[in-house]
Image (cartoon, rainbow, N blue to C red; front, side, top):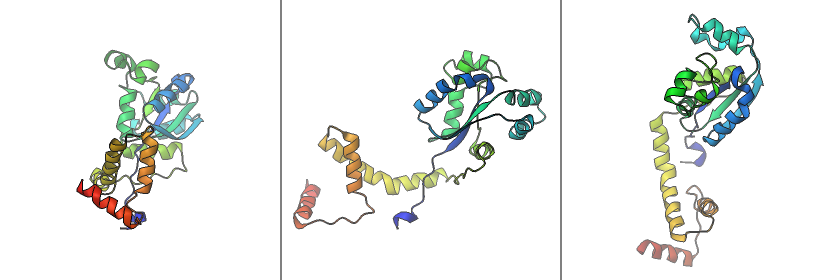
Length: 216
């Protein structure tokens, strides 16, 4: 199989919103986001109209808080962020915590909504509740975004086990044998030199050394 024909692995994305009530704490919140392993792919500060808020929260239409939600979300600027990491949707929702901020302070005191929110409406943050919701919401906030299709978990695991894990295990084994002063740089160099997609050319002595390694 040619290198370019390998299936690609996609890191999951989600949308995060810093709401009007917490925008003055945005730097602190973004610092927590980065320290939690997220990469910020896109960021913009904007103010939505009530009509845009109604379109964004269309799944909430008809619920008791819907008019108040649209009014609140259009009352001031917000910050929209496209976040990426493994299991981004679930991890971001866990980091935010329960929707009701007073309840969150009782059950999840370290979560972001407990720290920055005040009630179930003014709860500081928004996060997509599924991959498909994230796709729609990211395109809403960032209209020029291109969202890659998300592969099944089985396909991703098969690709890793077939094309990544064997080489990585070999590299980590050699790393443990050599114990270099800078293991990250050493492993990066080793992976470049031992990429299975690149042909390896050995002289006679190198071939003999390889045979000896296998015997030992």
